[in-house]
Amino acid sequence: TETETETASQTEPTATEPVETDAPTESEPAAQQPEAPSADNNASSGSFSGADMSISISGVRMSPNSNWASYSSALGEPSSVTQAPSCHFDGMDNIYEYSGFSVYTYRNGGEDYVYNIEITSSSIATDKGIHVGSSEADVLSAYGDGYANRSDSLIEYRSGAQSMYISLSGGTVSMIELYSE
Image 1 (cartoon, rainbow, N blue to C red):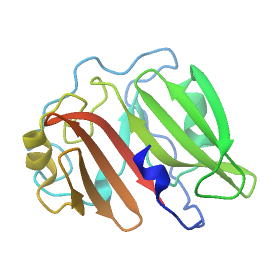
Image 2 (image 1 turned 90 degrees about the vertical axis):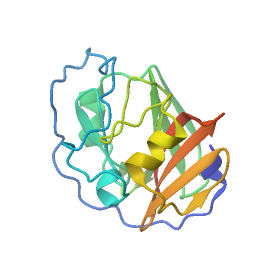
Image 3 (image 1 turned 45 degrees about the horizontal axis):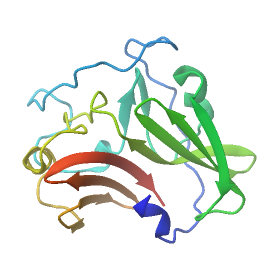
Image 4 (image 1 turned 180 degrees about the vertical axis):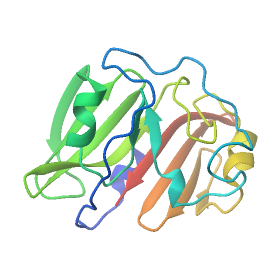
């Protein structure tokens, strides 16, 4: 990914809260129709904050820099697992591929921690309703113009050492990444 070319320092992972579920079973796919942005969402419309650095996938609330073990059994078997030398940390990264999303982990203290979540499916939406297929205008309406970087093909929102990358193709969202250094 574009973010893998960045240099990141290894940080101690933070404790993670128990996995929250809202209607999951291991075999249930994510909802087919993402919700549209709404004033009733927990996060306020038109701005970006650290609260936007988590996403619900198949009923599991997941965020970067959290322990992978708390999600892996709830998400079920990935379609594939790839190991590669880490670009960011010592040792090997694991890449867990699922239908519509991938999770990248690094090893620290004998455990795997999430550092990147890539969303490639239109059926998985952020809490503010942004999904693959949303317009650039929808992104700006949901998260505002307080982005850290912007080009024709990418909008980066940042909170501390975490970033939400919104990849664009022709003014339409083509991928969403939640990334932690």
